Length: 344
Image (cartoon, rainbow, N blue to C red; front, side, top):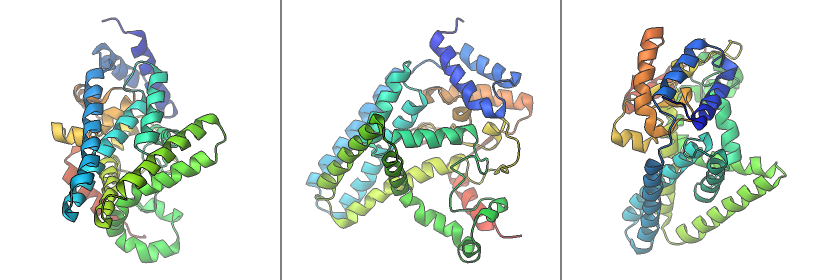
């Protein structure tokens, strides 16, 4: 088939992401990208994204309406969870926009990414994109992947970067602290977003900051004046949802030493997938196909299932480990990994 120009552009972005690990020069990766291009798997999936945007909008609108009519604290609590779920759907849509998965036009992707991230999710697209792109270049590479630079220790090699206080008093309980602090992830990203924008002095940062302020003024005036404190706490569910959606992708997988040379193959071997089904794929925003997402970061999420068949065959031929498990098993693996780390 004839490869469209925009498909060539999307493939070029994939090669750029792989550049630090040699993916742009490795004929194996080039062959893999050529195969998915020939299958048309970089074509846009506009109707699917329209459905997602409409469903998420209706979900949020229904939640705001329920806040005005519900009286029971427990009903409001459940509605807070409902609100968090649809808010995260918008965050995942923002993720796809920033990656260039939705529109052919890079400008359209960036425009709507900034709009949705700031106005609906209340976060900085600029901060997120910089951090997330670094993660994509070096997943699970200690000292290079910002997602590895967290207070918790998944590999004994990371102990050198932690204080003696943490190792003595917190390390034995980190498998519990991890889950207790998970709902705070969203608030940490809010703070990091604001700090990033305050340190920038350009019109783009000012625009994002303005949209974020509009978002939180609305949230505090509407939500926190209409719900009980118990229900308001339910919005912590957004942070927990974010954590359990992103944590399964790499946590408890092998951490690559900071001094080790990085290979594009680690995009596969340091990543795990969650077995797909319609509910899992929707709730995790397609990130259950994490291997395919890392190999083809500009591919629309609705093409991942087809891409997975190609990648699995490729991994079998090249004898590359391909990890896939259940969501519950990966939660268990994370817990056990955190619990097992001890000083030598």
